[in-house]
Each structure stands twice: as C-alpha cells, then as structure tokens.
Image 1 (cartoon, one colour):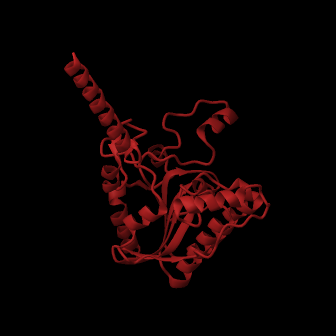
Image 2 (cartoon, one colour; image 1 turned 60 degrees about the vertical axis):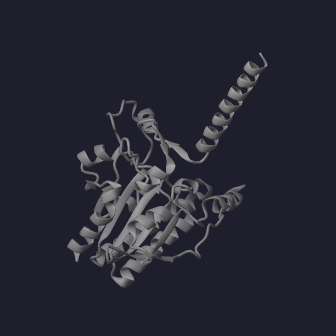
Image 3 (cartoon, rainbow, N blue to C red; image 1 turned 120 degrees about the vertical axis):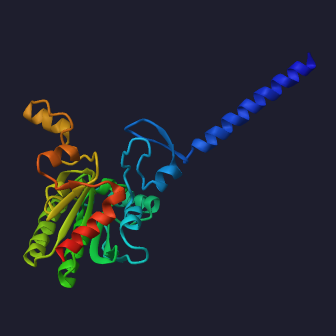
Length: 281
C-alpha cells in the first residue's frame, strides 16, 4: 500500500517535471507557421533563412538579419543613423513609444541604409524593418531613404530598397505624407542619371510606401506570398461593394497582372540582385 503511494507520487512528480521541461522549451524556442500551422523549432527556421522548412512560407525579417543575408560579410557601412524620429505634431505618447521600440528592437528607426557589396558588386541599400512601428514611414524614414538615393546618384551606384511597411505614420500627419513626394522626386533624379533601382517587395508592403518609392523600381522583385497593395482588401471591398478575386494583392496575383517583374525566393535573392546589377553594368 505504502509502496503503491510512493510509486504514484513519483509518477506524478515525473509527469510534472516533463510538463515543466516542455513548457520551458516552448518559451522563446518555438514558432508557429501561420500558413501550414506547424510548430517549428526557431533555430531550424533561422538556419533556413527564416523560411518555413515545411511549406516554404517566408517569415518577416528584421533589417539586421536581412542585411546579413544580402550584403557580403563585413562590407555594410551604415549611413543616416544620425537622422532620428521627430514629433512635429506633439502627438501624445509618440516619442515615448518610439523610445520603447528602440530598446526592444535595438534599432533607431524603421529603415537602415548604407553601402555594401553584393557578391562583390558595390551598391547602396536601404532595408525597412517591420518590427519598428510596422515599418511605417515618418519624416526620419523618408529622409534616410532620400539620403540613400542621393548617395547612389553621387557615387553612381545601383540602388536596392527592401520594402516592408504599413504605410504612412499617422503620428506625423501631413509631414509623413510629404515623404512620398520627397522620395519620388529623388528617384526621378536617380532615373535621369541613368542609374539602376531595384525595388524588393516583402510582406507586407502597403499604404504610402507602395504608392511611392516601392512601385518606382526599374525592376520590381517580390518574395513569395507577400501582401502588396495600397489599402487592405477589406477596405477595398467595402468601398467598391464587390468581392475581390482569390489571392488579390498577393505577389503571385500581381506578377500575373504585370505589377511586379519576378518572384524570387529568399535563398536566391542575393544572387538574383547581383546578377541584375552585373547585367546593367
């Protein structure tokens, strides 16, 4: 009788220990794919360029990881890091939220810009980061991207911009919307100089970014299964009072209808960009 009780206690203790261990493993070490619903070990996903090994779903990347994947090792030199967020409307809580995001993401704004080499080919690169206010475009983002464009013109180098954004930053109002005109004007000068601009659309690319520099590339690439558009599908349906086609605003749909030039998987993106730069030279 006593032995049975001891066995039962030991069994319950073992089960509890296993459950606690499993719980500890789940915290921060696993990720769920929102497409195939598989639970994946985070290190396996990272080692696969943040692509689901089960279904090929491309997870969103931080600007830091994207630069590490695209730029040749040790070649990235950042520019514009001194251009920081302003609060032109004195929007309540805005700068406090920005400071919290800086601490959390370890970056200063929603885009990182610089010069690097891509398979030995020198280029100016700008990489947006959806972890920072969903990659929204405020005055600092617009100014950094404009600086990258101007540097590309000055040094006669190709320009590559990786876009991910929820659109204009509402906390900066009309100042945010003005960045659409600023970046588009700079790209017009870039085009007049006969230089190459490759726009790479990633998930999601929406709002004022889609309506400005994201859509002005000489060549527009996109990752698979990205949401790309101006307004969201629900807003469009409510406006036009019609049901949208299946897959509307996904990169595959946009390729079929001529909005983008090619869909490129992440594992091939670096070599594809380098090849385009060489062809342009």
